[in-house]
Amino acid sequence: MSFKEKIDPERLPQHIAIIMDGNGRWAQQRGQLRVYGHEQGVTAVREAAEGAAEIGVPFLTLYAFSTENWNRPKEEVDALMGLLVETIDKEIPTLMDNGIRLNTIGDIESLGEDCRLQLRRAMERTSTNTRMVLTLALSYSARWEITRAAQRLAGDIAQGKVAPEGIDQDLFSSYLETSGIPDPELLIRTSGEYRLSNFLLWQMAYTELCFIPKLWPDFTRDDLYKAIVDFQCRERRFGKISGQLSI
Ligand code: IPE
Ligand code: IPE
Ligand code: MG
Image (tube, rainbow, N blue to C red; front, side, top):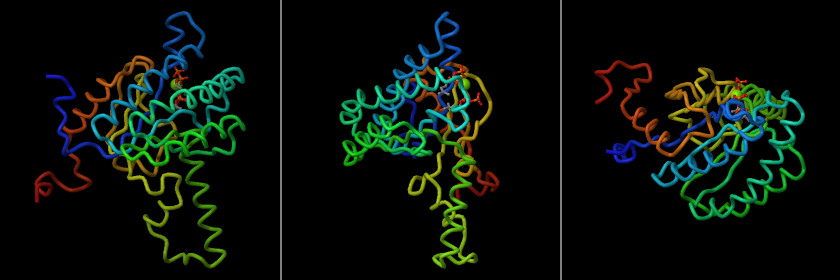
């Protein structure tokens, strides 16, 4: 039985987040420059997006570039940005064929003009697709997001639009980049690193974590399905005890 067949379609994670890690090591293992790994990583992005859409996962979020990644050597940052521009444009037909709507989170204003233009274009083109929302986290970090949310909320309080007593978790969430998107139920990180690297820290309070040793360019839809099967075998208690869950 394949992993796909083992998935219970009634209990699919509604939102899967992925930290796509290991491109550089993948390339270096092959005696190539790191950027070659990023190029090959695009195939894995397609596998994940098509694989998730195919089985009916409504939300997929991919960590593509972190706030901290700006600190990499300039040549690598430039190559990544170039690859992003090229890929977004090329992948529009894949997005259309699979009914995928493109979305972004992160400090999009910090990206180059070219990049912003392509993203805007792809988001407009795919805006009526309804099968899955694919969110790219670009120039994103959770602490940046939470700090910005606090700034905007403080601004609204200063203007009298929000009363401090009116702040609750739902209101605060609505100031985050992910407003309108449910919290991820499953996080996958490739490359064998066991950390969150500043990704969706607020949203992942109760996310199931799945760390896999493969490097990102080797990731296939079967790996995605295997992670979903693993997710479905777990008991999510949310602070309760086992006996309370079936009630
Ligand atoms: C993930 O692969 C892609 C980005 C962070 C943009 P890395 O580039 O981090 O590859 P490793 O972890 O150095 O192997
Ligand atoms: C996390 O990977 C960011 C992305 C996948 C975009 P990194 O490779 O930047 O994370 P660290 O530095 O190893 O924690
Ligand atoms: Mg890495």
